[in-house]
Image (tube, rainbow, N blue to C red; front, side, top):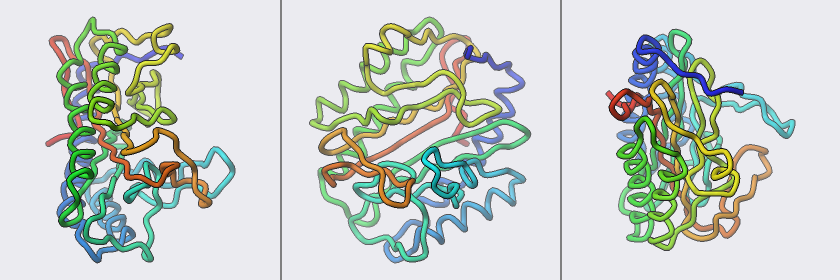
Length: 259
């Protein structure tokens, strides 16, 4: 499928969706303290989305392996969980945890999608470094996104940041195009592969992508847990995840999932 180029009007609508996502993630960051359940964080997100007149993107998404559809508005992935963690009243955050929260909405027919990793109280130095490096990868991508740039060069910069710190980039999950649907073309990896080099993405004005580095402290290998959704590191070491929705503009790019 061809990559869709979005107009300025469409980008402005997506900024509205992105602003809702940014508001919710900020509130969740403030609320995510030791003792709160991940289900309570989900309730906060759902209520804020409803108040904003937005539809949550994740709830009801079909599982590719035949498990139940995703039951929540947010993904809450703790410590060794990489992505797609399911909120639960039984799961309460603890001092020293790191929590990745992924959230998206559709507003006026267009989507916004972002993720953050949150430190719960005081965390150890290596976990903090993991979060900082993953966030730096996303910042680097934003810094270099502009028309005429090849994605392979940006992906290489991102990969080098992670590996220079002794971490590994998750290769089983990548970013994606986004617009009227949550997942559109192209696939946007955070690493360089033969496939990417053979089918590189040339950025141009109007492309909108969700860039989402996922980085593991140990091996890049992941496993899917028994619930059919939650993805965790194979070696049980922590993982971090950050994401923004980014529009390629005439002179560079614009992050749409900020206020």
